[in-house]
Length: 409
Image (tube, rainbow, N blue to C red; front, top):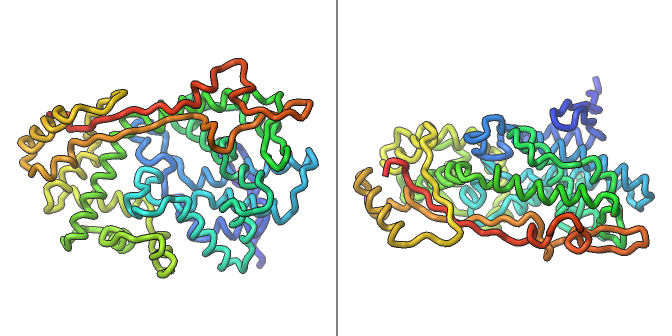
């Protein structure tokens, strides 16, 4: 019996989503993609917003749906786009996050230190292209921005791409933070192409302004929420400690896939020369890391056990936020206190008292600008077109510094 591959997915954000064709169905069914069901979209954000347990799988399906709406709109506008390019867009957006590791951005550059998720996504796309006999070649070109039409890549990765449109809606829905609600339908209906650039008709300018404001608010209220920062940096320090111990030859509990990345630091070239590494990475998801952390609560290493218990019991670090770097004497004083309180060495104190910085700019005027198309075919950047908001202020990078330390100090 031939399986029915014209499936319909009921999504809580977009409603019913149709799988457009058999190739998309087969990619979704592949274990590389199914792994995304087990990777949370927002890492440890659920420790602040309990509903934020949605996954990369849901987001990828939602982004593919929005891409289909955008394609339909461009076809109505008689933008020249071939069937092969449409298929490439669907596949590229479906797989744009397939390189994410456990807990998404929280552990980027921790498990695999020298590769970001975009680079790993490209490796997965190349591997799937071989598996599916070259049918992903156009998707690879669109994703890597080597295709002849610039606007195709902008739909997948730009300042007003369908990736951002979906995650703002989805993250707002699951966190309950209404500030992230945007006029996605309106924005998509206003999309156009002019001189091979993705543009927005002038009638959609207010929806774009709201999109930029919503993104700024979501970053401070959700993605860079101070308690989320505290939780995710605790997670990072736990993995750093486990990796340090493993590289020293000490026995640390881990699943087979996680053990490989704890014991070794791989370069981008290693993934090219050893195809088995990508397969090993494809076995990793949130469950590997969380199971290991539960086991590490009873580890022989005092630092690893203490850190792990704090995360499992949600005994998170206190976090201070400042507009300028923290005084070194203040940091040293806290580290001296933590060595006495926990009976650990001064070398291990930075696991418990540490600083960092975060930056937020909702719109980057120096990268792939959002262009507004006027009726006389004049094209202007949103920073020049907006008369309701000071987009120049919104596009300014705001940098904040944080300091984390145990609450009992």
